[in-house]
Amino acid sequence: MEVRDLIEEIIKALVDQPDAVVVNQLQGIRSCVIELHVAREDIGKVIGKKGAHADALRTLLHAIGGKKKMRYVIEIIEDR
Image 1: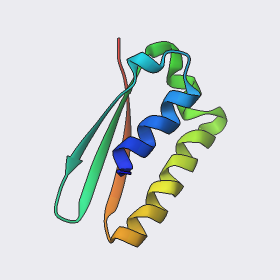
Image 2: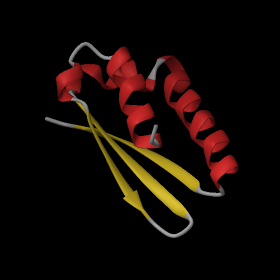
Image 3: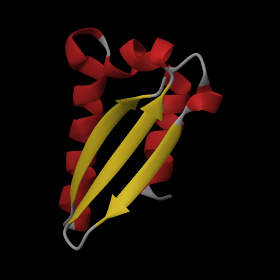
């Protein structure tokens, strides 16, 4: 399973509008940016209370990145 697919499945389980979730992956040589587009109503669910969900996603990506020798960055983008 790709990292992009893993993040997409996790986010779709968190939100009320899973059809609005779009995950894009911008691949570099040693780094990868994962853009996460969610509906405006679901932005709070993705970030979590005091950023708990966002921090958990970043921790997960850091662990995966250590194994694959890649740096993963997640950007949460609010769709209108």
